[in-house]
Image (cartoon, rainbow, N blue to C red; front, side, top):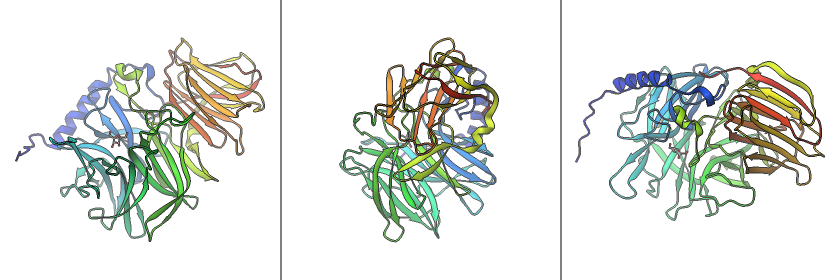
Length: 472
Ligand code: FRU
Protein backbone atom coordinates (compact mmCIF):
# COMPACT_ATOMS: atom_id res chain seq x y z
CA UNK A 1 0.00 0.00 0.00
CA UNK A 2 1.15 3.53 -0.76
CA UNK A 3 1.44 5.92 2.13
CA UNK A 4 0.64 9.52 1.17
CA UNK A 5 2.87 11.78 3.18
CA UNK A 6 1.36 15.22 3.39
CA UNK A 7 4.40 17.44 3.26
CA UNK A 8 2.46 20.70 2.81
CA UNK A 9 -0.04 21.86 5.43
CA UNK A 10 -3.36 23.04 3.95
CA UNK A 11 -2.96 26.47 5.57
CA UNK A 12 0.48 26.92 3.92
CA UNK A 13 -0.87 25.74 0.55
CA UNK A 14 -3.76 28.22 0.86
CA UNK A 15 -1.49 31.16 1.65
CA UNK A 16 0.73 30.28 -1.32
CA UNK A 17 -2.27 30.05 -3.62
CA UNK A 18 -3.63 33.45 -2.54
CA UNK A 19 -0.22 35.03 -3.16
CA UNK A 20 -0.10 33.38 -6.61
CA UNK A 21 -3.61 34.71 -7.48
CA UNK A 22 -2.67 38.23 -6.34
CA UNK A 23 0.42 38.21 -8.55
CA UNK A 24 -1.25 36.71 -11.65
CA UNK A 25 -4.23 39.08 -11.48
CA UNK A 26 -2.05 41.98 -12.60
CA UNK A 27 -1.22 40.15 -15.85
CA UNK A 28 -4.85 39.84 -17.01
CA UNK A 29 -5.88 41.54 -20.24
CA UNK A 30 -9.04 43.48 -19.27
CA UNK A 31 -10.69 43.68 -22.72
CA UNK A 32 -13.35 40.97 -22.11
CA UNK A 33 -13.40 41.18 -18.30
CA UNK A 34 -17.02 41.28 -17.11
CA UNK A 35 -18.27 44.26 -15.07
CA UNK A 36 -21.22 42.69 -13.25
CA UNK A 37 -20.86 38.92 -13.69
CA UNK A 38 -18.90 36.73 -11.29
CA UNK A 39 -15.75 35.41 -13.01
CA UNK A 40 -12.56 33.78 -11.72
CA UNK A 41 -9.82 36.19 -10.55
CA UNK A 42 -7.40 34.21 -12.76
CA UNK A 43 -7.62 30.81 -14.43
CA UNK A 44 -10.67 28.68 -15.12
CA UNK A 45 -14.25 28.61 -13.75
CA UNK A 46 -17.09 26.16 -14.37
CA UNK A 47 -20.11 25.14 -12.23
CA UNK A 48 -21.59 27.25 -9.43
CA UNK A 49 -21.34 25.41 -6.09
CA UNK A 50 -22.57 25.89 -2.52
CA UNK A 51 -25.02 28.70 -3.34
CA UNK A 52 -26.37 29.60 0.11
CA UNK A 53 -27.17 32.34 2.63
CA UNK A 54 -25.08 32.36 5.81
CA UNK A 55 -24.67 34.99 8.55
CA UNK A 56 -26.29 37.78 6.55
CA UNK A 57 -24.64 37.21 3.16
CA UNK A 58 -25.07 35.13 0.04
CA UNK A 59 -22.22 32.72 -0.56
CA UNK A 60 -21.29 31.39 -3.95
CA UNK A 61 -18.52 28.91 -4.59
CA UNK A 62 -17.40 27.70 -7.98
CA UNK A 63 -15.36 25.05 -9.77
CA UNK A 64 -11.98 26.71 -10.04
CA UNK A 65 -8.56 25.93 -11.52
CA UNK A 66 -6.24 28.85 -10.76
CA UNK A 67 -3.14 27.77 -12.69
CA UNK A 68 -4.36 27.79 -16.32
CA UNK A 69 -7.34 29.11 -18.30
CA UNK A 70 -8.56 25.56 -18.80
CA UNK A 71 -10.04 22.82 -16.65
CA UNK A 72 -7.66 21.16 -14.18
CA UNK A 73 -7.68 19.66 -10.65
CA UNK A 74 -10.72 21.35 -9.14
CA UNK A 75 -10.64 23.83 -6.26
CA UNK A 76 -13.64 25.72 -4.86
CA UNK A 77 -13.36 29.48 -5.47
CA UNK A 78 -15.50 31.68 -3.21
CA UNK A 79 -17.35 35.02 -3.41
CA UNK A 80 -19.93 36.70 -1.13
CA UNK A 81 -22.66 39.29 -1.63
CA UNK A 82 -25.25 41.17 0.41
CA UNK A 83 -27.73 41.36 -2.50
CA UNK A 84 -26.86 38.90 -5.33
CA UNK A 85 -25.47 41.81 -7.41
CA UNK A 86 -22.38 43.22 -5.63
CA UNK A 87 -19.77 40.50 -5.11
CA UNK A 88 -16.44 40.43 -3.31
CA UNK A 89 -13.91 37.63 -3.38
CA UNK A 90 -12.86 35.51 -0.41
CA UNK A 91 -9.90 33.11 -0.23
CA UNK A 92 -10.21 29.83 -2.17
CA UNK A 93 -12.35 27.61 0.08
CA UNK A 94 -11.28 24.09 -0.93
CA UNK A 95 -7.99 22.90 -2.39
CA UNK A 96 -7.57 19.46 -3.94
CA UNK A 97 -5.40 16.93 -2.08
CA UNK A 98 -5.76 13.23 -2.89
CA UNK A 99 -9.17 14.23 -4.25
CA UNK A 100 -10.28 16.84 -6.75
CA UNK A 101 -13.07 18.96 -5.27
CA UNK A 102 -15.94 18.51 -7.75
CA UNK A 103 -19.35 20.19 -7.57
CA UNK A 104 -21.62 20.26 -4.54
CA UNK A 105 -23.79 22.43 -2.34
CA UNK A 106 -23.93 24.12 1.08
CA UNK A 107 -26.34 24.13 4.00
CA UNK A 108 -26.34 25.83 7.39
CA UNK A 109 -26.47 23.37 10.31
CA UNK A 110 -26.59 24.90 13.78
CA UNK A 111 -24.21 27.79 13.21
CA UNK A 112 -21.90 26.03 10.78
CA UNK A 113 -21.74 26.35 7.01
CA UNK A 114 -21.45 22.77 5.75
CA UNK A 115 -20.24 22.00 2.23
CA UNK A 116 -21.04 18.64 0.66
CA UNK A 117 -19.04 17.95 -2.49
CA UNK A 118 -17.85 15.18 -4.73
CA UNK A 119 -14.36 13.87 -4.19
CA UNK A 120 -13.13 12.80 -7.62
CA UNK A 121 -10.14 10.50 -7.28
CA UNK A 122 -7.92 9.10 -9.98
CA UNK A 123 -7.41 5.33 -9.65
CA UNK A 124 -5.19 2.87 -11.48
CA UNK A 125 -7.97 0.49 -12.52
CA UNK A 126 -10.75 0.94 -15.13
CA UNK A 127 -12.44 3.42 -15.47
CA UNK A 128 -9.48 5.13 -13.72
CA UNK A 129 -11.61 7.32 -11.43
CA UNK A 130 -13.93 6.99 -8.48
CA UNK A 131 -16.42 9.44 -6.94
CA UNK A 132 -17.51 9.67 -3.29
CA UNK A 133 -19.09 12.46 -1.23
CA UNK A 134 -17.15 14.61 1.25
CA UNK A 135 -18.06 17.25 3.82
CA UNK A 136 -16.21 20.42 4.85
CA UNK A 137 -17.12 22.85 7.63
CA UNK A 138 -16.73 26.52 8.44
CA UNK A 139 -17.76 28.55 11.48
CA UNK A 140 -16.95 31.93 9.94
CA UNK A 141 -17.82 31.40 6.26
CA UNK A 142 -14.20 32.05 5.29
CA UNK A 143 -11.97 29.18 6.42
CA UNK A 144 -13.10 25.62 5.63
CA UNK A 145 -11.83 22.36 7.14
CA UNK A 146 -12.49 19.02 5.48
CA UNK A 147 -14.24 16.47 7.71
CA UNK A 148 -11.82 13.82 8.98
CA UNK A 149 -14.41 11.03 8.59
CA UNK A 150 -14.73 11.54 4.79
CA UNK A 151 -16.22 10.05 2.69
CA UNK A 152 -19.75 10.20 4.12
CA UNK A 153 -21.24 8.54 1.04
CA UNK A 154 -18.76 6.03 -0.35
CA UNK A 155 -20.65 4.65 -3.37
CA UNK A 156 -23.81 4.61 -5.48
CA UNK A 157 -26.26 1.70 -4.85
CA UNK A 158 -25.12 0.03 -8.09
CA UNK A 159 -21.46 0.91 -7.52
CA UNK A 160 -21.35 3.16 -10.60
CA UNK A 161 -18.26 5.41 -10.43
CA UNK A 162 -20.18 8.38 -11.91
CA UNK A 163 -21.76 9.54 -8.66
CA UNK A 164 -21.57 13.28 -8.19
CA UNK A 165 -22.85 16.80 -7.55
CA UNK A 166 -24.71 16.47 -4.21
CA UNK A 167 -27.48 19.06 -3.63
CA UNK A 168 -28.57 19.06 0.02
CA UNK A 169 -31.66 20.57 1.66
CA UNK A 170 -33.62 20.19 4.89
CA UNK A 171 -37.21 19.01 5.25
CA UNK A 172 -38.68 18.31 8.68
CA UNK A 173 -36.07 16.56 10.85
CA UNK A 174 -34.11 15.18 7.92
CA UNK A 175 -31.45 16.35 5.52
CA UNK A 176 -32.00 15.16 1.97
CA UNK A 177 -29.55 14.97 -0.90
CA UNK A 178 -29.95 14.34 -4.63
CA UNK A 179 -26.98 13.06 -6.65
CA UNK A 180 -26.39 12.59 -10.36
CA UNK A 181 -25.45 9.10 -11.52
CA UNK A 182 -26.23 6.44 -14.13
CA UNK A 183 -27.69 2.96 -14.53
CA UNK A 184 -25.48 -0.03 -15.35
CA UNK A 185 -26.45 0.38 -19.02
CA UNK A 186 -25.50 4.07 -19.08
CA UNK A 187 -28.75 5.96 -18.63
CA UNK A 188 -28.65 9.13 -16.56
CA UNK A 189 -30.49 9.19 -13.25
CA UNK A 190 -30.95 11.04 -9.98
CA UNK A 191 -30.61 9.32 -6.60
CA UNK A 192 -32.25 10.49 -3.36
CA UNK A 193 -30.82 9.93 0.16
CA UNK A 194 -31.60 11.21 3.64
CA UNK A 195 -29.76 11.70 6.91
CA UNK A 196 -30.34 13.04 10.41
CA UNK A 197 -26.82 14.39 10.86
CA UNK A 198 -25.35 14.87 7.32
CA UNK A 199 -22.89 12.10 8.16
CA UNK A 200 -24.74 8.79 7.89
CA UNK A 201 -26.95 8.55 4.84
CA UNK A 202 -29.77 6.20 3.87
CA UNK A 203 -30.59 5.55 0.20
CA UNK A 204 -34.30 6.24 -0.51
CA UNK A 205 -35.16 6.14 -4.20
CA UNK A 206 -34.38 6.96 -7.82
CA UNK A 207 -36.39 10.14 -8.45
CA UNK A 208 -35.68 10.40 -12.16
CA UNK A 209 -34.14 8.21 -14.83
CA UNK A 210 -33.44 8.58 -18.54
CA UNK A 211 -35.24 6.13 -20.81
CA UNK A 212 -32.23 6.48 -23.09
CA UNK A 213 -33.44 9.55 -24.98
CA UNK A 214 -32.62 11.73 -22.00
CA UNK A 215 -28.92 10.96 -22.12
CA UNK A 216 -26.25 8.84 -20.47
CA UNK A 217 -25.51 10.99 -17.41
CA UNK A 218 -27.44 13.58 -15.41
CA UNK A 219 -25.13 16.14 -13.86
CA UNK A 220 -25.84 18.76 -11.19
CA UNK A 221 -29.34 17.72 -10.11
CA UNK A 222 -31.43 20.08 -7.98
CA UNK A 223 -34.82 19.32 -6.44
CA UNK A 224 -37.14 21.88 -4.88
CA UNK A 225 -40.70 22.99 -4.36
CA UNK A 226 -42.02 25.88 -6.45
CA UNK A 227 -45.64 27.07 -6.26
CA UNK A 228 -46.87 23.75 -4.86
CA UNK A 229 -45.11 21.59 -7.48
CA UNK A 230 -41.75 19.82 -7.29
CA UNK A 231 -39.08 20.63 -9.84
CA UNK A 232 -36.31 18.27 -10.85
CA UNK A 233 -33.70 20.50 -12.48
CA UNK A 234 -30.61 18.88 -13.98
CA UNK A 235 -28.03 18.90 -16.74
CA UNK A 236 -28.32 15.81 -18.96
CA UNK A 237 -25.37 14.79 -21.10
CA UNK A 238 -25.91 12.96 -24.37
CA UNK A 239 -29.31 14.18 -25.63
CA UNK A 240 -29.64 14.18 -29.43
CA UNK A 241 -30.62 17.50 -31.04
CA UNK A 242 -34.25 17.64 -32.26
CA UNK A 243 -35.07 20.58 -34.53
CA UNK A 244 -34.51 23.78 -32.53
CA UNK A 245 -33.97 21.89 -29.28
CA UNK A 246 -30.90 20.51 -27.50
CA UNK A 247 -28.35 22.25 -29.69
CA UNK A 248 -25.63 22.75 -27.07
CA UNK A 249 -22.97 20.16 -26.16
CA UNK A 250 -25.07 19.32 -23.08
CA UNK A 251 -28.43 20.66 -21.89
CA UNK A 252 -29.97 22.05 -18.70
CA UNK A 253 -33.67 21.78 -17.99
CA UNK A 254 -36.41 20.61 -15.70
CA UNK A 255 -39.27 18.21 -15.11
CA UNK A 256 -42.34 19.44 -13.20
CA UNK A 257 -44.07 16.90 -10.98
CA UNK A 258 -45.24 16.04 -7.51
CA UNK A 259 -43.32 14.43 -4.70
CA UNK A 260 -44.35 12.50 -1.63
CA UNK A 261 -42.04 12.55 1.43
CA UNK A 262 -43.55 9.24 2.64
CA UNK A 263 -43.09 7.11 -0.48
CA UNK A 264 -40.11 9.14 -1.83
CA UNK A 265 -41.68 8.93 -5.24
CA UNK A 266 -41.46 11.77 -7.77
CA UNK A 267 -44.31 11.64 -10.29
CA UNK A 268 -43.52 13.69 -13.43
CA UNK A 269 -46.40 15.77 -14.80
CA UNK A 270 -44.69 17.83 -17.49
CA UNK A 271 -41.78 16.35 -19.42
CA UNK A 272 -38.28 17.83 -19.76
CA UNK A 273 -37.94 21.43 -20.97
CA UNK A 274 -34.81 23.55 -21.37
CA UNK A 275 -34.65 26.39 -18.86
CA UNK A 276 -32.47 28.74 -20.96
CA UNK A 277 -32.20 28.74 -24.74
CA UNK A 278 -28.83 30.45 -25.21
CA UNK A 279 -25.47 29.06 -26.36
CA UNK A 280 -23.67 29.11 -23.00
CA UNK A 281 -25.62 27.91 -20.01
CA UNK A 282 -25.01 24.83 -17.87
CA UNK A 283 -24.91 23.21 -14.42
CA UNK A 284 -27.47 25.36 -12.56
CA UNK A 285 -27.88 25.59 -8.81
CA UNK A 286 -30.68 27.20 -6.81
CA UNK A 287 -31.19 28.38 -3.25
CA UNK A 288 -34.21 29.64 -1.35
CA UNK A 289 -34.17 32.80 0.75
CA UNK A 290 -37.06 34.94 2.04
CA UNK A 291 -39.50 32.70 0.19
CA UNK A 292 -37.82 33.32 -3.20
CA UNK A 293 -36.08 30.68 -5.31
CA UNK A 294 -32.90 32.05 -6.88
CA UNK A 295 -30.94 30.41 -9.68
CA UNK A 296 -27.38 30.73 -10.88
CA UNK A 297 -25.69 28.92 -13.77
CA UNK A 298 -22.30 28.54 -15.34
CA UNK A 299 -22.29 31.04 -18.24
CA UNK A 300 -20.41 28.47 -20.27
CA UNK A 301 -20.46 25.08 -21.93
CA UNK A 302 -18.14 22.11 -22.30
CA UNK A 303 -16.00 21.78 -25.42
CA UNK A 304 -16.48 25.29 -26.81
CA UNK A 305 -13.82 28.00 -27.33
CA UNK A 306 -13.33 30.77 -24.75
CA UNK A 307 -11.66 33.70 -26.56
CA UNK A 308 -10.69 35.20 -23.16
CA UNK A 309 -8.48 32.21 -22.32
CA UNK A 310 -5.43 33.93 -23.86
CA UNK A 311 -6.12 36.85 -21.48
CA UNK A 312 -5.46 34.82 -18.31
CA UNK A 313 -8.97 33.71 -17.39
CA UNK A 314 -11.94 31.70 -18.75
CA UNK A 315 -15.57 31.25 -17.77
CA UNK A 316 -18.16 33.17 -15.76
CA UNK A 317 -21.52 32.98 -14.01
CA UNK A 318 -24.78 34.30 -15.48
CA UNK A 319 -26.60 37.09 -13.67
CA UNK A 320 -28.73 35.80 -10.77
CA UNK A 321 -32.34 34.99 -11.56
CA UNK A 322 -35.54 34.53 -9.61
CA UNK A 323 -37.86 31.65 -10.48
CA UNK A 324 -41.61 31.45 -10.73
CA UNK A 325 -43.92 28.72 -11.98
CA UNK A 326 -46.90 29.58 -14.17
CA UNK A 327 -48.84 26.75 -15.78
CA UNK A 328 -46.49 24.27 -17.38
CA UNK A 329 -43.32 26.30 -17.28
CA UNK A 330 -40.76 28.05 -15.14
CA UNK A 331 -40.36 31.79 -15.61
CA UNK A 332 -36.91 33.24 -15.01
CA UNK A 333 -36.36 36.93 -14.23
CA UNK A 334 -33.25 38.91 -13.28
CA UNK A 335 -33.22 39.45 -9.50
CA UNK A 336 -34.82 42.77 -8.52
CA UNK A 337 -31.54 44.24 -7.24
CA UNK A 338 -30.23 44.26 -10.84
CA UNK A 339 -31.89 47.67 -11.28
CA UNK A 340 -29.39 49.06 -8.73
CA UNK A 341 -26.72 48.72 -11.46
CA UNK A 342 -28.36 51.38 -13.65
CA UNK A 343 -26.29 54.51 -14.09
CA UNK A 344 -27.00 57.09 -16.75
CA UNK A 345 -29.82 56.69 -19.25
CA UNK A 346 -28.24 56.44 -22.69
CA UNK A 347 -31.47 56.30 -24.70
CA UNK A 348 -35.14 56.86 -23.93
CA UNK A 349 -37.64 57.01 -26.75
CA UNK A 350 -38.25 55.85 -30.32
CA UNK A 351 -35.48 53.99 -32.08
CA UNK A 352 -36.28 54.48 -35.76
CA UNK A 353 -35.20 52.09 -38.51
CA UNK A 354 -31.38 52.15 -38.80
CA UNK A 355 -30.97 54.27 -35.66
CA UNK A 356 -27.93 53.30 -33.61
CA UNK A 357 -27.37 53.28 -29.84
CA UNK A 358 -23.73 53.50 -28.74
CA UNK A 359 -22.88 51.90 -25.43
CA UNK A 360 -19.68 51.47 -23.56
CA UNK A 361 -18.82 47.96 -22.27
CA UNK A 362 -22.13 47.52 -20.41
CA UNK A 363 -25.79 48.18 -20.99
CA UNK A 364 -29.32 47.21 -20.17
CA UNK A 365 -31.97 47.75 -22.85
CA UNK A 366 -35.74 47.57 -22.53
CA UNK A 367 -37.12 47.09 -26.02
CA UNK A 368 -40.79 47.14 -27.04
CA UNK A 369 -41.99 46.54 -30.57
CA UNK A 370 -45.19 45.62 -32.35
CA UNK A 371 -45.22 41.82 -32.30
CA UNK A 372 -47.46 41.61 -35.37
CA UNK A 373 -44.43 42.81 -37.37
CA UNK A 374 -40.82 41.64 -37.62
CA UNK A 375 -38.23 42.82 -35.12
CA UNK A 376 -34.52 42.77 -35.81
CA UNK A 377 -31.83 44.21 -33.59
CA UNK A 378 -28.22 43.99 -34.65
CA UNK A 379 -25.79 44.08 -31.75
CA UNK A 380 -22.05 44.24 -32.35
CA UNK A 381 -18.74 45.65 -31.20
CA UNK A 382 -18.18 49.33 -31.99
CA UNK A 383 -14.86 48.30 -33.62
CA UNK A 384 -16.23 45.02 -35.02
CA UNK A 385 -16.60 41.52 -33.61
CA UNK A 386 -19.22 40.25 -31.19
CA UNK A 387 -21.96 40.21 -33.78
CA UNK A 388 -25.35 38.89 -32.75
CA UNK A 389 -28.77 39.42 -34.28
CA UNK A 390 -31.93 39.29 -32.15
CA UNK A 391 -35.08 38.70 -34.16
CA UNK A 392 -38.81 38.16 -33.79
CA UNK A 393 -40.68 36.45 -36.59
CA UNK A 394 -44.46 36.98 -36.24
CA UNK A 395 -45.19 34.23 -38.82
CA UNK A 396 -43.76 31.44 -36.66
CA UNK A 397 -43.83 33.43 -33.39
CA UNK A 398 -40.21 32.62 -32.62
CA UNK A 399 -37.49 34.62 -30.90
CA UNK A 400 -34.13 34.10 -32.61
CA UNK A 401 -30.65 34.67 -31.22
CA UNK A 402 -28.28 34.40 -34.16
CA UNK A 403 -24.64 34.52 -33.10
CA UNK A 404 -22.65 34.75 -36.31
CA UNK A 405 -24.87 32.17 -37.98
CA UNK A 406 -25.09 29.84 -34.98
CA UNK A 407 -28.83 30.06 -34.30
CA UNK A 408 -30.81 29.38 -31.12
CA UNK A 409 -34.56 29.95 -31.43
CA UNK A 410 -37.77 29.13 -29.62
CA UNK A 411 -41.46 29.94 -29.75
CA UNK A 412 -42.59 32.75 -27.47
CA UNK A 413 -46.11 33.29 -26.18
CA UNK A 414 -46.04 36.39 -23.95
CA UNK A 415 -48.03 35.92 -20.76
CA UNK A 416 -48.22 39.65 -20.03
CA UNK A 417 -45.35 42.03 -20.72
CA UNK A 418 -44.04 42.09 -24.31
CA UNK A 419 -40.76 43.80 -23.39
CA UNK A 420 -37.34 42.38 -24.22
CA UNK A 421 -34.87 43.05 -21.44
CA UNK A 422 -31.32 42.77 -22.76
CA UNK A 423 -28.20 42.76 -20.59
CA UNK A 424 -24.88 43.45 -22.29
CA UNK A 425 -21.54 43.11 -20.52
CA UNK A 426 -18.01 43.26 -21.93
CA UNK A 427 -18.34 39.74 -23.40
CA UNK A 428 -21.91 38.58 -22.80
CA UNK A 429 -25.56 38.95 -23.73
CA UNK A 430 -28.64 37.84 -21.77
CA UNK A 431 -32.11 38.30 -23.22
CA UNK A 432 -35.22 37.99 -21.01
CA UNK A 433 -38.51 38.02 -22.92
CA UNK A 434 -41.68 39.30 -21.26
CA UNK A 435 -42.20 37.80 -17.81
CA UNK A 436 -39.23 35.47 -18.33
CA UNK A 437 -41.05 32.88 -20.45
CA UNK A 438 -38.03 32.68 -22.74
CA UNK A 439 -34.42 33.48 -21.79
CA UNK A 440 -31.19 33.26 -23.80
CA UNK A 441 -27.67 33.46 -22.32
CA UNK A 442 -24.78 33.67 -24.75
CA UNK A 443 -21.15 34.79 -24.57
CA UNK A 444 -20.24 37.32 -27.30
CA UNK A 445 -16.93 39.07 -27.86
CA UNK A 446 -17.08 42.65 -29.18
CA UNK A 447 -14.07 44.81 -29.99
CA UNK A 448 -14.46 47.99 -27.98
CA UNK A 449 -17.91 48.97 -26.72
CA UNK A 450 -21.34 47.99 -28.04
CA UNK A 451 -23.49 49.23 -30.91
CA UNK A 452 -27.18 48.40 -31.14
CA UNK A 453 -28.82 48.99 -34.53
CA UNK A 454 -32.53 48.75 -35.26
CA UNK A 455 -32.88 46.78 -38.50
CA UNK A 456 -36.62 46.19 -37.98
CA UNK A 457 -39.16 47.50 -40.52
CA UNK A 458 -40.64 49.43 -37.57
CA UNK A 459 -39.59 51.96 -34.94
CA UNK A 460 -39.02 50.43 -31.49
CA UNK A 461 -39.48 51.95 -28.04
CA UNK A 462 -36.16 51.68 -26.25
CA UNK A 463 -34.80 52.64 -22.86
CA UNK A 464 -31.08 51.96 -22.46
CA UNK A 465 -28.91 52.34 -19.37
CA UNK A 466 -25.23 52.11 -18.76
CA UNK A 467 -24.57 49.65 -15.90
CA UNK A 468 -22.00 50.12 -13.17
CA UNK A 469 -19.32 47.65 -12.08
CA UNK A 470 -20.30 45.29 -9.25
CA UNK A 471 -17.54 42.68 -9.29
CA UNK A 472 -13.77 43.14 -8.83
C1 FRU B 1 -20.58 19.73 -14.61
C2 FRU B 1 -19.45 18.90 -14.03
C3 FRU B 1 -19.89 18.19 -12.76
C4 FRU B 1 -18.60 17.98 -12.04
C5 FRU B 1 -17.81 19.22 -12.39
C6 FRU B 1 -16.33 19.00 -12.52
O1 FRU B 1 -20.16 20.75 -15.44
O2 FRU B 1 -18.98 17.98 -15.01
O3 FRU B 1 -20.64 17.01 -12.98
O4 FRU B 1 -18.79 17.84 -10.65
O5 FRU B 1 -18.34 19.69 -13.62
O6 FRU B 1 -15.65 20.21 -12.66
